[in-house]
Length: 140
Image (tube, rainbow, N blue to C red; front, top):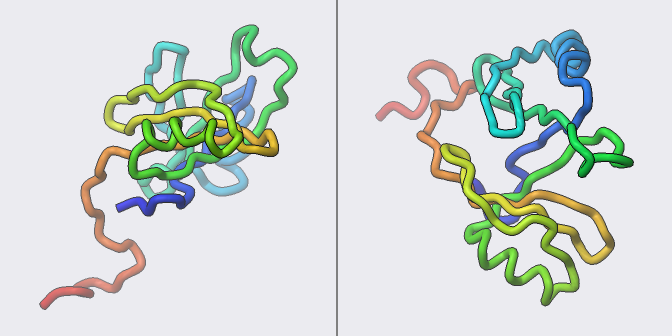
């Protein structure tokens, strides 16, 4: 279960996903799985078969002048309520909440100082055994 207010995802926004994939594969041993999206291919970065980050290709005029960057997402229990509270907190909704099947409901927000971030109410994920736990740990 994701905790309200915790970071739950990081996404690399890049114009050259192939170069980025080669870099992170060499640096961290990441493998990649493509996901078809309306905007093009989204890449899931994985460690030991588990998703750890995403790679989003920045293409189109809306990304002109925006440098490549890592983009964090925070978990919130109710994305619609969080988006509604942003204006009260002197922030801004850059993209209203929308649904991403199998992922959750997401909004792109800007804080009071101008920093952009994603917020999401993730879909519940199936419980996975703790990869660091010794075999038989937790068995009664």
